Image (cartoon, rainbow, N blue to C red):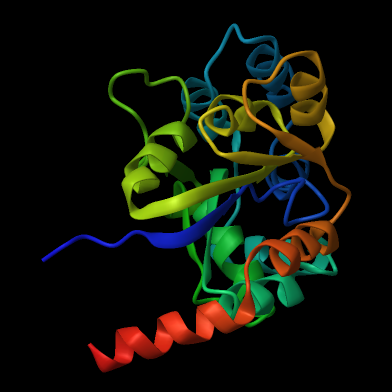
Length: 235
């Protein structure tokens, strides 16, 4: 049987992109004593990978499930156009997945709050221990590199043959590497500055998911998506 590629995939970062605030930093600010910022600065400079940074920070964090959930749901705010974007993508036959170097707990809580729990996401994992201790696990790490907790580049390449087109949406340092293997980038923040300096991939500056939605409307015909879904049911 001949393999048929899907139309398109949107891979999106979470913190600073879907979430208007960096939830991971907010959590560390609240539940970690001073000292984690210096570790984070080493990551930004490139002298430390995020996986090693998480391992250094883990012994500092003290929080239980309930306090973490309360904090996340109180302080998180997603892009006001993201929910509508997801609905539009579904109608146009475009898949949406999240790639994050953040933590599964808060991503899941925020998606469920907005009734988006069906969206597949890839991230690091938080494990709650006794006496408010936590540990971090890295199911999406790349054994060939090991710098990032979640290797977004590996995830993109795992999906490459499945889709005709991969669109990457991001804002930060961890998005630079994977975005350069996409077919189109929607960029802001540090990612946009990197694209403006040098990018082998076409890119578009964006402020919110309204602009990504407009691109989907213009690029992916609604009638073709409906016909494609009908053929799948018939076969």
